[in-house]
Image (tube, rainbow, N blue to C red; front, side, top):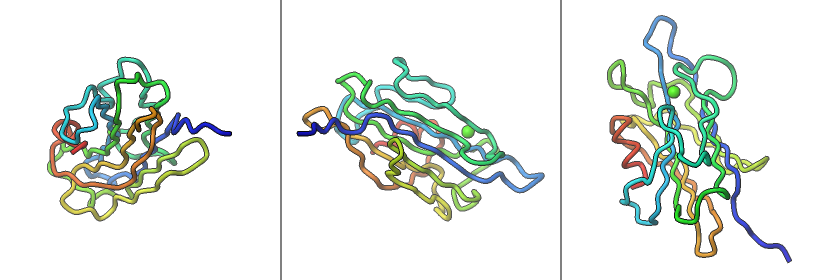
Length: 172
Ligand SMILES: [Ca+2]
């Protein structure tokens, strides 16, 4: 008999193409938020992004980009869900667009795409292109069930908020 331990290690990969030559760079960021409550409006316990590490090292940004240049994956976030302390019940991952050069939404970003993997299994591939009015998007939600096992909830939800605010409300 097999025992379902749920999801263990997750890789979230963000890809996009650079802005046109001579224009302001397009900087997208992967952001993770952990919660000790299942309530959607609960505040995050902590955030992980380029300027904020997880206190226990279970969620790490292993690759980051400020302009989308280069081939392949531009930003990568690794979540070791099986190492998270029992009190964490929910983890949400989002993509924020930096607003340093004026308002920038997904429809102006070239080929923004997010891939979510569990080992060799692809859980989701989300195309964020053409999302008008969105400056941020929630792209994945991981929830611990009553037995302690982690499950994945697919689905993309758009937000119109500056990156700092987005990180605190993307779990709604
Ligand atoms: Ca970035």
